[in-house]
Length: 343
Ligand SMILES: [Zn+2]
Image (cartoon, rainbow, N blue to C red; front, side):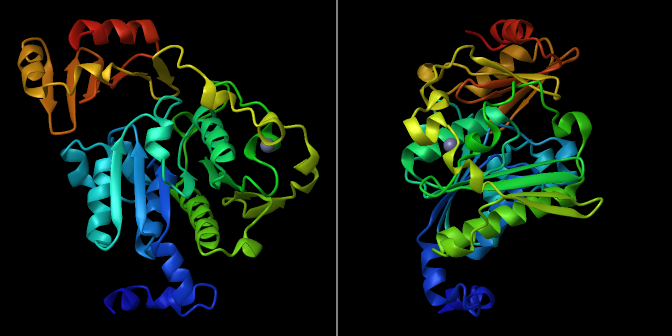
């Protein structure tokens, strides 16, 4: 009964016990975004023995991530790993008894069904409201809970959406703020402890839900400023009757939206993401590297190829998706992409 000694300290709790542990082992959770929030919640869920973890992130590691993203170290950085892969490797060493799947992918209306199918609960570690509203739509449609978390500067907040009990995130916040209109931690900064606190809150709520302790789940919006030590719970009771096209009319605009532009400016990062065309099959990095090395500096591994030219850096993943750093102009990014990567 080695597994029970592994989890003995949480199984002693009457809130978990043998039955709670069994429920955790049978659970399937997706962590969407593996930054400051997602790396903490994935870490805690893996250690708690959640039986299946799907780790989803579209990005690769950068040196500024190490200040707060707890699953990563300098070796991962020097190996130039995508976050999902580095997280998967780290978590396998922490708990080899659970199933972990990593996806280096952009979660969008076209990919969400494939990435999240079969999952019982979603933990939000994203950094933008467009993806969060997409998760909210998916949660309402599939009737699976999702747990919003956000942290910036010294502040953070979290909210649990239970599709069949109470308001959703859209009931709380109304229409999504325009991308670009809200500040990001790339622009105004973040202190790690507040992100870790929010992620711990999210994970605790996830454990309650997975262990079927719905009576203990926080139904208010939870807000903290860890610098001034202000903790607030803001009741959302009154929003149960609020007009919400998702909750009342089962309308899912983010889920049903066609992907317009296949480029997204990554706010505050001076970068643009380009969704490539995967139909042609995986890119041959070796061949591409040979061609590119005539003009600039290029390196690649099993997961990505990185090309530096003047003030630009193009990182391309094997399915053709790319992140172009050094510009926030989608046209310019697309030009660079077609000139150097092709298509
Ligand atoms: Zn709603």
